[in-house]
Image 1 (cartoon, protein in one colour):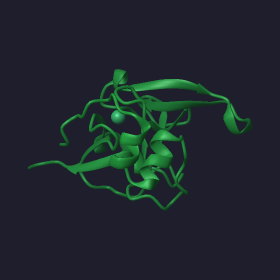
Image 2 (tube, rainbow, N blue to C red):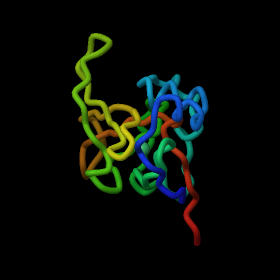
Image 3 (spheres, rainbow, N blue to C red):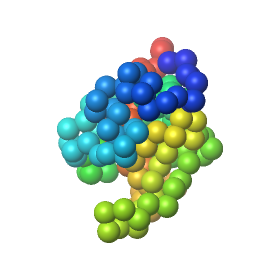
Image 4 (cartoon, helix red, strand yellow):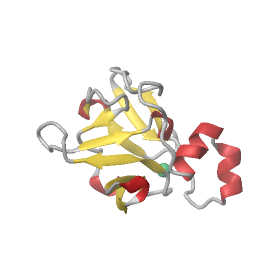
Amino acid sequence: MIAPMSAEKTEEEWRRILTPEQYAILREKGTERAFTGAYWDLKKDGTYECAGCGTLLFDSRTKYDSGSGWPSFWEPVAEERIRLVDDRTHGMHRIEAVCANCGGHLGHVFPDGPKPTGTRFCINSASLAFTPREE
Ligand code: FE
């Protein structure tokens, strides 16, 4: 697991730390193209941390194949790790998911997930860093 870093950074520091793709998504609320990210089809056992600050956000045990082309989870490891924000951009009304620690854009949340929560956390691969579970 990546040690959580300080969440207080200037945009210049973020640009230095993140790859251009990570910066465009985490800091400028971009979206990677469906079926192109590193993790949409990953089925390995492990955890997913925020690519910006290292905070543990999701566990592979709550990951499922939504058919969307983005990593999809029905639950974060803890509710308070993710901040939900009203998003009315692009002519839609959606709920944006943001890392509560560093403010990085993760993706969106939809009410069409599987049981037990019925919630789909639709997250960009570029916003995540996967760590395989140790045996
Ligand atoms: Fe973060």
